[in-house]
Image (cartoon, rainbow, N blue to C red):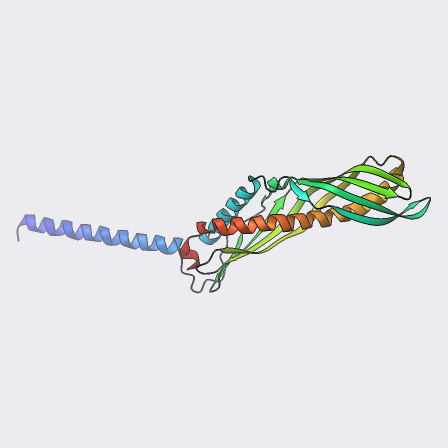
Length: 245
């Protein structure tokens, strides 16, 4: 063989070695980015692709909801509550609340990384959300014996905690399993316009604090849950098929 033939053979061998090395690197990278679901029981969010993708998904859902104008302001249902108070003697009173509006839900955000569990049934997701401050305002009427006063009632909430759970089965879209308001913190109620009924303000505030906690929780869970489920299914295509195949 000539010197030229030897050089050409050497060049081919070096080229083949480079190609093989590149293939090995690509395969290793693919395995790192898209690990097999077989034998995987849990994915920690920080370094793992599972958690990163689910974080992104929930961020997109929250962005779609909070910028839509559909939840801020949010209409709160009318309600009437009876209570007992001391006005010279113990008497029954009534507070009717209407035209309720809740503002501040556009502050909803993730309070940490999503927790992701991967198994044969698909990808199970859980995330804690926070919102606040939020404020609910009602027009109302307070009745006590022969007295009646139109009032404005404001309920301020420093923050609320919401738990969201969802599942994406193989070949399917993410489905919302749970949307639950767990805690309202820093609830304060102010009643404006009581006039001669000012003596029942303290009792009324205690009663209305419980009422507002119930009504705010119900309004958020019923209204926001529906919208969250719709957006989650709509944007669920952002999860790569490789993760739930």
